[in-house]
Amino acid sequence: MGNGFQFIDIIFFAMIAIFLILRLRGALGKRDGNEGSGFQDLFKQDPAEGETAQENEENNIVNLSQRNIKADVSENFRTDDNETDKPVNEMQDDSPLAAGYAQLRHNDSNFDDEDFTVGARVAFEMILKAYSSADVDGLKDLLSNEVYGNFAKAIQDREQAGHVMEDTLVGIMKSEIVEAYMEDRNAHVTVKFVSEQVNAIRDENGDVVEGEPNTVLTVTDFWTFARDTKNTDPNWFLVATRSLD
Image (tube, rainbow, N blue to C red; front, side, top):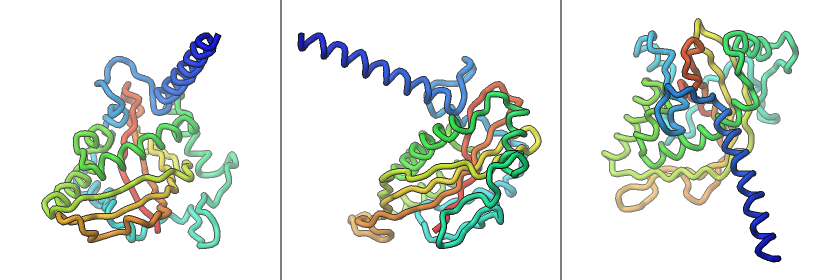
């Protein structure tokens, strides 16, 4: 009798696992057989190849080890100390965000903002983990060429200095889309992440040279993802990041 109940429990949890896997696969695009293998392929395609390296370098430089850099925040976002950052315009039919959604869905009928946000959270965790652990191979298929170059250079500099980064993502407190727009054939979506993290950098002797290993920080990041809507590959990739203290 007891074994029967255990068997039913196993089936129940297996069904939950299958449901979560199917939802995750649909979060940032379905596979059509033309992609490589692995979850990293979600951000493989780069719609910005026509842009110059200088343009991307100016827009996409990132230093995740320094959290005191002020972000260049758009006027469309509130930055008052007494309230949570959010779009000034509510989601009315004539709001910029609603208009952006309409543009995206006109070019990609499969776009779903809720599913996208779920997938973006997963990508956020994966990229932070890969960056802190110096996993350049894990980053390569998640980022645009320019952003990957910036991340790889920061990792190289860190290793040459003999430093080790400790970046623990305690949890994501909030994630929401704050901007969506089309640029020629390329869809762009910016997601605001509010997360709790523990950040520290140690030297070769294990001494802390930056950050606080015993302090949980609340970090606000704005990450922009993009994809070529004319490409049959539905995967998105990270094209720009900003941090806000």
